[in-house]
Length: 51
Image 1 (tube, rainbow, N blue to C red):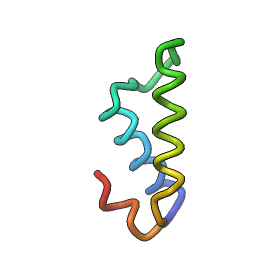
Image 2 (image 1 turned 30 degrees about the vertical axis):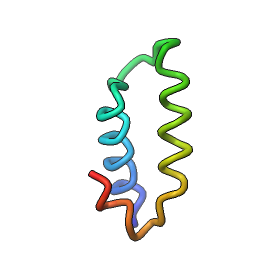
Image 3 (image 1 turned 180 degrees about the horizontal axis):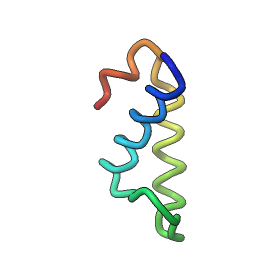
């Protein structure tokens, strides 16, 4: 998977979790951590199917 594709997928997952693009609020920190932990476990070949 290309980095740009992964970025798009990650932004979609973050948006689905309620984290808006832009400045991070203190309430977003825990959610962002959870999303990144989950995203890191997705095999690169499967990440495009998580939208």
